[in-house]
Length: 479
Ligand code: GCO
Image (tube, rainbow, N blue to C red; front, side, top):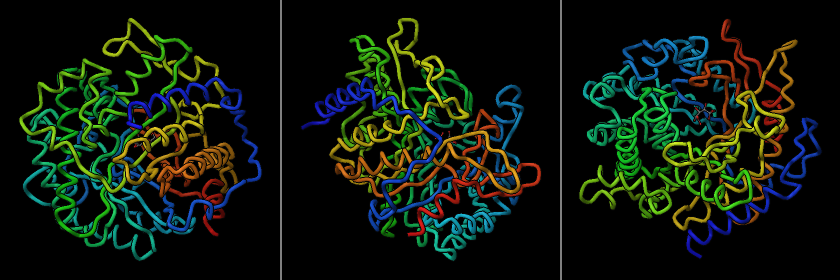
């Protein structure tokens, strides 16, 4: 069955699930007896927690670090809730030994982090900052000392401002700049880091940074967005080839934010609207990497990407990744909307649908969405292995007597992991799960209000407190 037919099948399946009573899960905060254990996922399944540089490190000017677009953006009036920024964040830069000890204490096997490009190449290219190299060497060595596999994301949105000033992702030269950065990381860290991810969520940083404007660098320009889409897709493959060329037996992947897209009503208009959103939110970057080209048949507007392509690019977009990182939190429910530009499709938000409970991000908790999106991505012949590189939920977490009773987050993990296991039992090659996030952290335009961490961070005192969900993982993984 080719992917298109398979997708229709999955699509129909999703539709059926959407309207069946059990899909409207009565999400309860009462944890029911778990009907699975860690062993059910297999002994080779990797368990860990994920973070990113700008969201936790702080030390925004320490030891020669250069300015990133998020340093600039967060200090621009009106961009971030409560005028918050990542200048200090969780001060992970100075506290990483203790934080990694917490990850180990709760029986995590892997720690996903990102390298801040501007710590290593303050101007994005040229002069290397040896103190930045030293920091990540100490971080990686500490991971290994504590028995944590270091999983390294090369790009988690913090582009050097000096490169943005040269056009950033709109400038095709970024392919060469990114390659040099990748080569540096592979040379310096590839002897000990065996799991690399090239990009974190290309759809999100390209869409919110260049079309929607809510994220750095804050552009709202479709022409820029189209250039960015292609240059990002080129970097996604080119950097992967650079990693493979160093021949250090690396596992090379890249990550995608993805959600099952379901029609608000069971009619042709809403279903077609969902197909267009599925291109933007799920297919746009994975399909060129798999040699399927850009999915322009469903969204002819994206044929504009061809105006940015150069001879031979189609071939260069392809790379046989060792794993694909899936990052799923909720689902998209959408309807046709003539007034919506570009895709004539509009989300029907959870609040509008009267769904509850919601997370602190107002996201619907929809565990079956994890199963459905895993099935959808597993349909691609080129997807050899899937790692869930992010999944988690933000809630209002209050510390009382040195404890955080985050029962809803425990129920969230229990029900999402049940769906991961359901997909795995049906043959989806899912081989790992990295919870988002180890620490409460800076949630981009939302600032620090949404708390995603297994570990509570008091940003005034930098005190860490293990939440009950962290203790849940400690028990669940201690088998
Ligand atoms: C993302 C990013 C993370 C977010 C997390 C919660 O997926 O947007 O990778 O940096 O903090 O997903 O939104």
